Length: 379
View 1 (cartoon, rainbow, N blue to C red):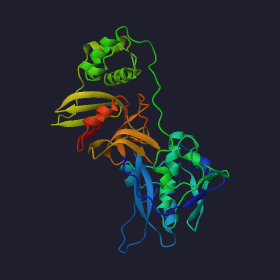
View 2 (cartoon, helix red, strand yellow):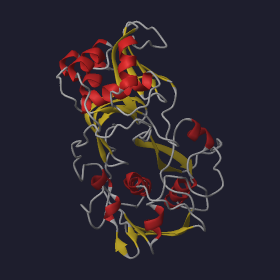
View 3 (tube, rainbow, N blue to C red):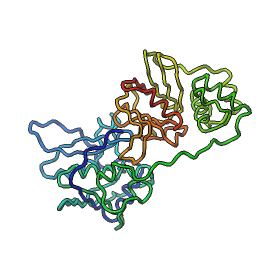
View 4 (cartoon, helix red, strand yellow):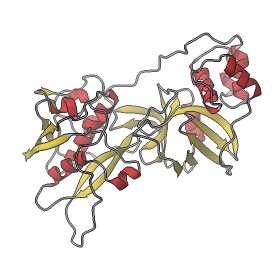
């Protein structure tokens, strides 16, 4: 992930009043129910700007907005955050996790404390999505503390301090600032899922076949049905348009007998990565030949991983997503806040916020394979 922003020396306090955040911060990731914002137009005279923190992938995508002459940077920033990204920003993959229907009632900044009162518009979307709550709080905290005179944040809902919006457990109570968001509050748990269904009659034979087709490394041939093999089977099934259940049944066994290694769309010199969003497969290629074919999960609906050609520009062995408050181990970033990274849950469908999830057992190899500058194609 991107490096943590420089923390401000002072801290600001935000109070969100009367049950608003319970609805506004616990929604489905839609945008504010206001008129679609227009792209800022250049002005001949420089004017103050406000910094607004949207998201792209698993990281922040800060943007600036011109501050109208009749308002303050803090108020302009909140209004811009609630309005959401512009059309051109959305086309570039920038989004917001704040739900539709939030209205700014009042904003008062005194002595470093910002008190903001928000209200749900009628028929506002309030569907519960626990994975988005930390990002909503983070967007508010970072946007408001970027304004002059705002130092730390206290989120209050129904008259109760709601630090529970940061992480999935009540680990912090009271005021929050960027320091609270820039470090892990709860550590990730190890994956505990195991494959369902009966193991094939010859697990070792299946694993050897998967290894010859590059879905498994030779060192993973153990003769024991395990999570790594299930991911390899899922990738094989996806590539060959079979049901993605990770179980080696009659159809999958028949396909394994006659299959050949996956073929890439492009043949390039050196190392190259191809991501197939719909198939849920990522190919690691060298000189046009498949080194590994990996089961992956890209951005879910509304957070689709943008198609196109990119290059790896940042790598972190254990990256921390500030907006989503989650570890991203073995992260290789290739498009702003969008990265390949390991994750405990890699389902057979798009499920991320734009990143490409890889199984925990495969992430270290993928991380080593992708060097700085490695070409990445997303289809």
